Length: 84
Image 1 (cartoon, rainbow, N blue to C red):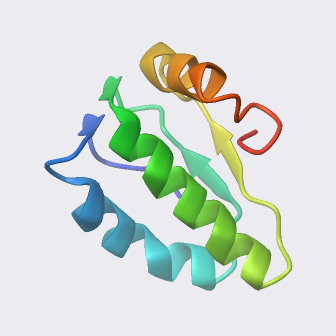
Image 2 (cartoon, helix red, strand yellow; image 1 turned 30 degrees about the horizontal axis):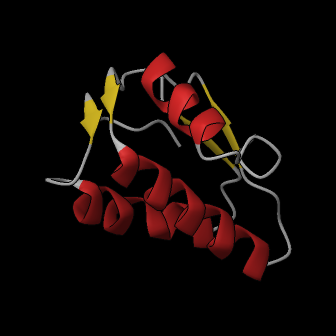
């Protein structure tokens, strides 16, 4: 699924999560963050929930084209092994 948001943060994290849940539960296992330019720690929480939901149905979720701000947070929180 390609995310349409330009940022993922505290102000829109719940909306983005709600919009993407159906895609994940329908079998989508790749989240494309190509259009996302800015993130904060709420984006990490959203992705962790995507991963949890994908794992609940026996799949592995992959995040592609993540912006540097997101990748830096993943490294900061030592989640590189979990968020791929």
